[in-house]
Structure formats: structure tokens, C-alpha cells
Length: 77
Image 1 (spheres, one colour):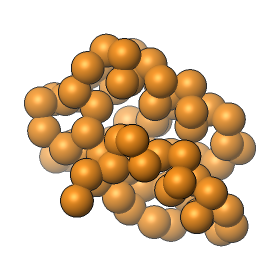
Image 2: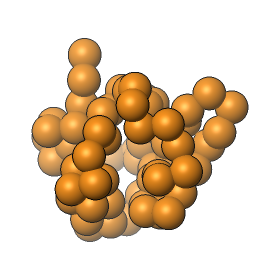
Image 3: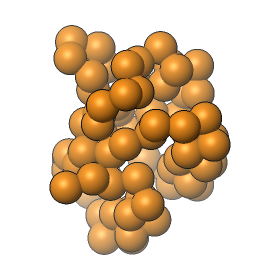
Image 4: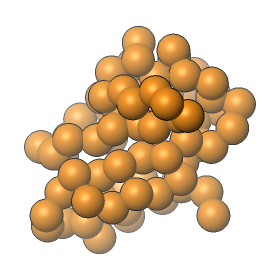
């Protein structure tokens, strides 16, 4: 598992993020405080506080580099 911080501060960003990660056959969780939701769920994402960066847990054994490359527009340092 790998964890990165992402920012989803607009509706369009949320839509394209979900569209990008549904192409991968792995589990993705978004963690905000004590809440953990499925990152492939648009409704779940909108239940979080999107004004600040969120932790994304990537549950993949391989293709991590490919996933990170695809998610670059959302990743914050």
C-alpha cells in the first residue's frame, strides 16, 4: 500500500479523478480525519471536507508508478 496526499478542490477535479482511478482494478481509499471512504465513489468524496488535502491509500502490489503518473494532476506535496 502507498499513501499520497491529493487535492480535489473542484467538482470537475472530482469527476476526472474518479474517472481516472476507475480504470485501475485496485482498491483506493480516501482518508479525511476519522472518515475512510471508497475513492471510486463520487457521493462518498462529496461527503468529505474538500477544502484541504486528503490522504489517498492505494492498495496495489504492482503498477504503483503507473498509478502515481496518472494521478499527478491531483497530488500535492
